[in-house]
Image (tube, rainbow, N blue to C red; front, side):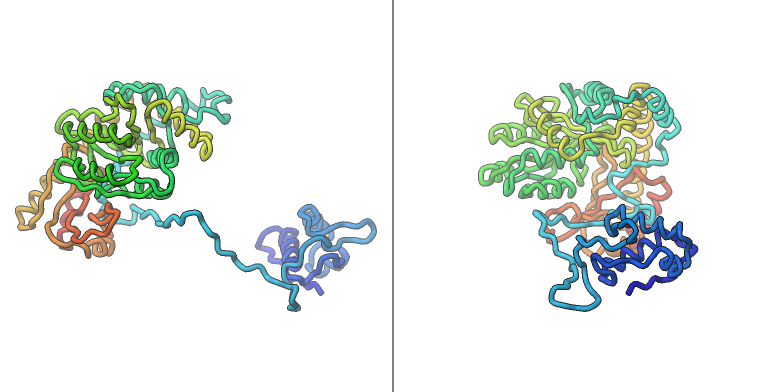
Length: 478
């Protein structure tokens, strides 16, 4: 027999609470399929509510399919409902138990750190968001909201809004010497990596990467079934002899590079080394992913042109991002490649994400067209160069205090790669305990390193006072 519980006056609406109790009673087997419910009057007395509340609850349950209403007979439980479980156990009464899913590939879960919780933040690619001209950018957003037409908001322009693609092509031609027919705008450079992996890799095929590399890129390749081949590095970048041996002995489809500011070592790959690698990839038919993630921030001299600027064999897939220029939440990356490659990437993107953030893309296009974009870049490049010099001075000061360390001030980028010349395998735990965010060498390796000695220290995202104090805190832990 169905017995109701008192309704909570401070909880949700009474008719919803009553419907939930009846629904729960049906699911638990207290009320069987085909069983008639008490009259509306009796239910009103049971729950201490008026008839109007009772009828609202019953009609909702009828609409959901739990009850059926019979003229002059009242309400009964839908007889076609399956019995979920019964209060009287029998061989036919079974409860649903959780079923373990069998995934095609298990993706490891990792929670992103909440950077605001750290006292000092040496994240390697983190811009100083406090310096972003939000008021200026808001004017671009307002203009777009006032002038956008309805057709721009429909399902179209999978490759990105035409206005933004036009601005990006002009920017690449002017700032990077890279002339391209078209670009694909993505939800960050990580989506571009994922699309490329899906386009090129079959299960078991290889991707060559430097031994120290960008972990999310590895994860994208492995999720597509790719096998990672770690290639030795030296003071000029990826070692060509080791790459040639890998190509000769394995099925390699892609080579992933960060040639301007190698991630994480910050090294700029020499022109001669780039040319050797390019010729080798042409010979073996291997496509190159050139990840130019922070091209804008180069301080000592003009940055080298991207490898994609001279690509007669059309084997380079060039990608970059606005996460370092603006902030990660803008979720804007872009990729350019040979037309046949770009067409394939757009086709895959249509399957997973067939519409973009129109307002953000059009706002960035407006911001670029006004010239404020380039002004922001000039201002941030000057600021980051000052912080780069500050970190170099502070590290030299620590060196003079007796710390045996080695580093080379990078020509550009947003971080230093520092050799602490000792085993620092226990340092990550100490950093976490001291609420200092920084990555040590193991974080960038695919395989376990025998002796961990290096740390990557970002300088762009913190004020000078925190850079200095944070470095003192890190070296105090040593």
